[in-house]
Amino acid sequence: MLSKKQARAFFLGGTVVTFLIFIGLTVYSLGEAQDQTNIENMTESVVRGKVIWEQNNCMGCHTLLGEGGYYAPELTKVYDRKGANYIKTVVMSKTPWAPNGRQMVDYAMSEDEANDVVEFFKWIGEIDLNGFETVVSPLAETDNELE
Ligand code: HEC
Image 1 (cartoon, protein in one colour):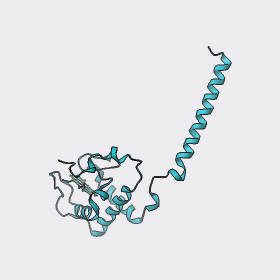
Image 2 (cartoon, rainbow, N blue to C red):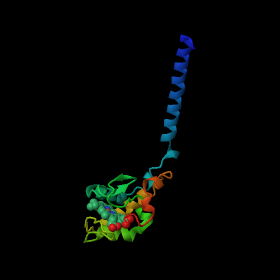
Image 3 (cartoon, rainbow, N blue to C red):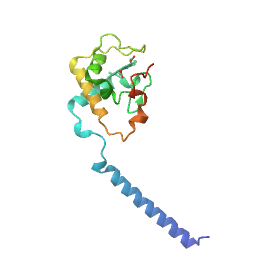
């Protein structure tokens, strides 16, 4: 059994040590070397694409970084998977895009808007996910997600 004095020292010592570890890890996590936000590549076009993404509620059907609706394909790596021209065709389509049965909204975007959306997908696809993409979008690695 610990004496009262020993218990007290044990408690205080443990608290101080774990607090210092906590501070150290916080400083380490927020350090520049750990930055995975890809912010250095953010352009005005990327920001416009993000605004289009928000204003049209793309997330109601799609997921990005695993967040959003599960009606339509996960899009974090869609730029790698499908490329710019395919993405532009989808968002510029004047009839609902639906090669596999489920329908997308017919946004009929202008070329400029479509380019911004492509830039946004390109940017988000370049975020370092630390390997998490295999968890976020296992289905998105193939083209058969809706089959
Ligand atoms: C009503 C639901 C819905 C909304 C809202 C929606 N989509 Fe879609 N989207 C779909 C469906 C469903 C598909 C897949 C069609 C298929 O493959 O059959 C799709 C496909 C896509 C694809 C091609 C993905 C691939 O892997 O083939 C892209 C890119 C895309 N959508 C972008 C967007 C963007 C950008 C927005 C917002 C401006 C948006 N979507 C909003 C339903 C939606």
